[in-house]
Image (cartoon, rainbow, N blue to C red):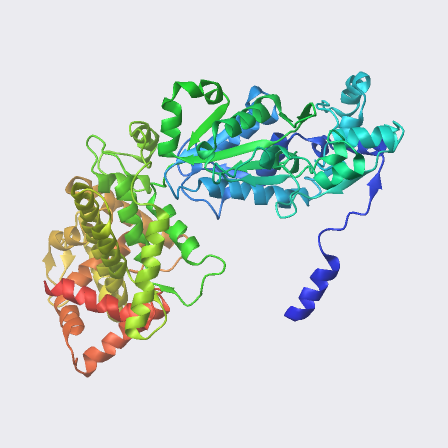
Length: 639
């Protein structure tokens, strides 16, 4: 099917067709079979999240919810608190009468959390498990159980397992009395789907100019043309029912920049959350079951909390801090997602470690000092690498000691803009597609920091993080070149491994080795063994060499018993890094000459072409980023 045919088919089918209309008795029977049909707004969101599944988080005691995976990274703790809010609210506790407030630094994913919940609820309402029914023609698409008379609601709960809360809206009450003669059993009920675009069950409100803002944007107002028809401004059908409170009933209402709203607007939110009602002029309170998700930046949050006049609203908030991510690997994923987001051009080449270089600078700028743990070491610890005496199990303890960690520093939006600009500039200068390398990323970040409107001390501190990140990246880039060069000397590496194993076996058994040329006995080559063991990551200390060597022999024995191939420098992952790095050091002069020669001889040119091929085909570089890598590492080795 081509694109135009697909468009035509989509136009014919449109949104899910829901022609089925059922009476109250049938609806009640369906609820009795599946009570979630009549779930409260909070329970519906919680069911949606739980249905997607969850797994253990990055650290002990954390849960990672699959609903948020692939979109939000490094937010396991705040997201678990968000899910905890919905869990208690779904159980009917007072949490359901509280506004969920997300606060934190700009670009910290607060609005992304709200957006994911809104989009998720739209999709959930289209599924069988998330089915939603409403009174046909109701401007608030309200819960059909509101039709059940007060005196029968106890029996309805026994039959369905669902408590009936709330009264009919003025429009449905008028229709029931005047169009159906009070026959609530035959009030038509239909299935609906939540949609923010169609203003069904999903609403968003952003504060505007205080002079032009009106509470009717939330509550709705009069329809003056309808007043002419119905003869009174107190007739239910004379209201326009276009307020956000009506349209988001039974779903989610997102309040953007919450504390920028005037006090009278915030009071309306308070009543909506606490009493689950809102007031329209000339009408009584109107029931509405809505999840209110508000978000704001840290400065406005702290200003609000410090004002004693806001005590009433403070008690109606469940405030959850949403800091910047502090894990480098998650920060990389954020950049990758934003740089390759839907609608972005796909001609951007990102070389290995380019995003990691920027992520290191960002994370370092967000961390707080910890006794006995430098910021670079803390960064590594958070990213899953044990450093010094600190173990991964201590991460929760370290985090608890760092109050407000992640609440300041470089934000992901600004960094992505910097990286995108650096890639575009490189493409223009080299007349190629856009590409980004680690060095380009660090240079662009340094220039960005120099331009920041911030105190000199702040800029110097951030610039120092660029230097720290470069030290880590330089080591990794040398490793990249090593991994590309060593395969050209695979025979050397294998011989080195076999030599090491021969010496280890002799050492562990207390026997001499034989010189392959003279046949003379000699002591195991301790210097060779230690040189390789010190290159293993993590390095083997002198005190642990015996245990390490015994482990090597044990792996050989296990492989032989299983009938597996003998160990090679590539298959033994424990020794591979040590063997390669040792060999690279031995070949450093050859590598240095090869990389630095403007016009290498034939043999060097062949070796360089082989390295380029490995970098491009196996390591994820393109021609330009591979050449930049070799030039840069060549400069490093010439220093």
